[in-house]
Image (cartoon, rainbow, N blue to C red):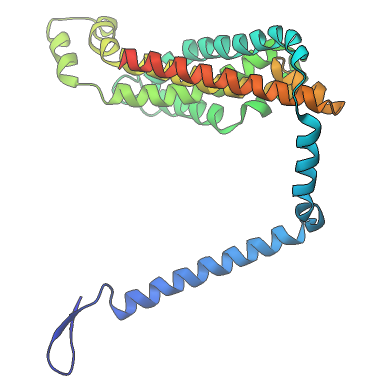
Length: 271
């Protein structure tokens, strides 16, 4: 704001004195909170292991190189299981996410006060819990294996897909919907010919994007017994077979890079 000095010259200041004091007070509060949190973390940290971490990392790197290339013959089925977990989990999630998205969108829900809050609760609850936690719960219920991984990925993906999809539904061009309604079309015809064509590009992009994410998440579900290449990684870590671990990590990296490439190509073709 402009102020006047002794020579009646106007000087510009970014903040008033009160705003500057408030600004510095916020900084002091932030620093105090950071110092307190750091003190709590420091008290529960064994710093000897932290300072010794570079030596341990160098030792593990020495043990893990070169990778055990002959072990790659045993990774074909785990990689295939990982791909199946991601793909089937994504398909099941989309089947459930589509109706939930239509129930959650303001312009398509049958009831904004009853059904929409329930749909939003499903979206929030499935998104708020990590897939590893879902896998742990499902393994306790239905036992370890690929099926538990598929269901864990599916449940985790429902909220993600439904949220993006219902936002796309709410952003459609209502003039097209009104034009179809003017012809005397039924509610289902309006949805099929006025809404679905508008959201199909978004739906395809969401499906491919989520499949790409699920490829990455499914690679680690085996660590808790949900099948896939993560199971081989867990077994190799348990016996400290570091050359096998490095090979598995390279295979996981290659799988993620390929899925990213495929996802980018598909999204580019759609958009």
